[in-house]
Image (cartoon, rainbow, N blue to C red; front, side):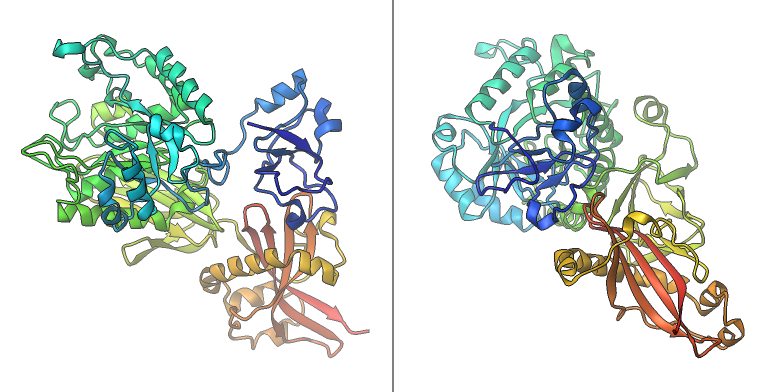
Length: 606
């Protein structure tokens, strides 16, 4: 891939491609619009020896170039960097690059069913039977259904085909492989062969990711289907090098081996292990069962499928592939579509995920919240192989709101006792999709979990450190600092106009939670002057119509301070005007509010 290093002050060209600012500090005198960035890697740590060449200036085209080839720079480049908003942005012809895209795929299904799968929220095909062929691609194109498929002769002749968004690198090479003539099974395909083939696929086309799907040995060491490599989990550290997207499958709801059968948490174990082996530079997906497959006695219930999906997401899966085949008692390729109840359940799960996709794609916040299950005991194998926690939890933050995703890990009921870090006072927790709310006190709340139950919580952010109250004429925490001093011109307002509009939208999202805490008594407690006059203050104004104006900025860090007047307050002198004010600190790169401060400000008439 072609790479080019540019100064940010150089004019951007139409052929630049994907532009990345690889520097902690924002360059002075350059607007966001003028820079035309696709990504800002602001946590990049450049070595001091790199600064003359790179400081505030490095923009990479196609792929980031952090600094010149210097020993100190190499060490700096090796520092882990946060994932991009969309992990597929590095591939020009890869999957959807929008921040709200989350892969919801089906495995090896007929393209003629694409429309029916789209109705269930499926947005990707993985694998094509004896394909891709011209007819298969034409059918998928007709329904605008992208596909990850093999790099066969047809694909190599049509590398510009827009429906192809990735290359399939075989299936379950880690399992024992059938010998010619039906003479049993030999060893798995060696990892070095997979790595060699991966490089061959990349050599033909590096504009799309390569996907490698592994077997149930990822989650279950005793999986005898690996033959001579059973109980050799160390192989997977080598296998994962053979793909950009690595996936695996295990189907505990219909599993016929007692060691796994009914233990849905094996899905979570596989995801967690694969994430460890894959590292930060590879994407992890997993397969989910949604038919009886070959088990004539049972099939997964809707609740089990939902639990497996959220176990996977909570433990770090970045894509879901539904296995839709049924083999017994008769073969049905589209077994999911033939089961009305499960199809309806999968559609509901996908709708839930799509509504939260941007949140799911946000970085996890492991210190933001904890949960204790009561009873606390878990099955010995769960405690040994995965975690001693009976409820799994993931915390995310998006647009100022905090989200908690929780799932009961066992087939028994429990109570979850949650604690959100940094929250004081009372707050309302919305339980997503359940038409109910829970009151949290100082960040603590309790909820009941049925066997394998999933609960998704949203807190609007007020009470988690976002909202603060400052006494009259007091210093604003984090905003009354010299770097925000700025004399605003009309040109400045035009330059920051889009950011001001976004900050206003974030403010309006927070209003319901703020109204609960902004009482008349709270306003009176902020007053240092005109206290007798404030005694008659009985109600606060409506907040929806507040006009926000910019009053400060730190362009280097991408920060913006806005001020709004909530209302004029009673005063003790005709020469003094007093206002109830709100100040917002807005983070431009993440498009989120990081602080809301309400205070009283006054002015003496000259």
